[in-house]
Image (cartoon, rainbow, N blue to C red; front, side):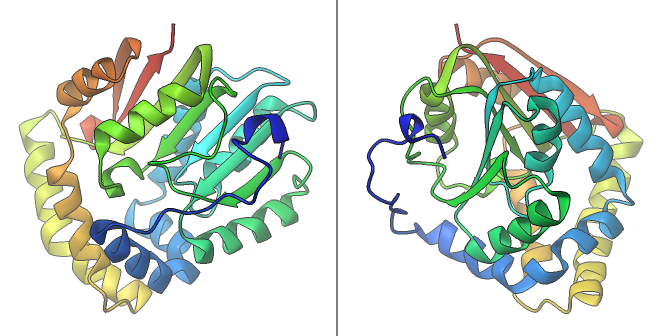
Length: 251
């Protein structure tokens, strides 16, 4: 990791977890081993397409420095490493080391250890200097943090002027039939299938639809990002608004 990006030369400290974070930690540690398989099965493979679209929205160039928050098993970090090339750098940050360890193995298998660093940290208190990154991304992670406003302010702080933040997150389907089918799937089928596929008994697949309902819808998230300092904020609905990509620029 480029030392100029880090606040100090001491190893980064992870802040004591808040109650919501403790719950999320336990849940994701319990399913980490089958997390990638679950994502593919439960999204019918669509999550790969959604993530590729998010990376495209980041507009990365060769030699750029990128940060992926809530990186999990490093899917976005791996995609971004191909965009920034051998002269660029991607840092993936997550507060769950069980997930990161799986990501590290994927990075090693891909032969991208020279471009990707996966590190333990808290998205609400980033251990990086201001204006360190050309892009900051987060995929399906913002809704799991305890303070939506603070996480976007932290993203704004570590972005370089002209840099982009990209948030890929579950959202509100726009067609009425999509909303009905999505609620049926999320609240009836998803918890059942998730328990069958993963063997999980911690309630992570009951938590998932509830966390989506609590997260701001498309227009509310635009307002939140503008409040945090981002300009030119826009969003793109994917799969009828089941997920949305929000993009903002730091001027």
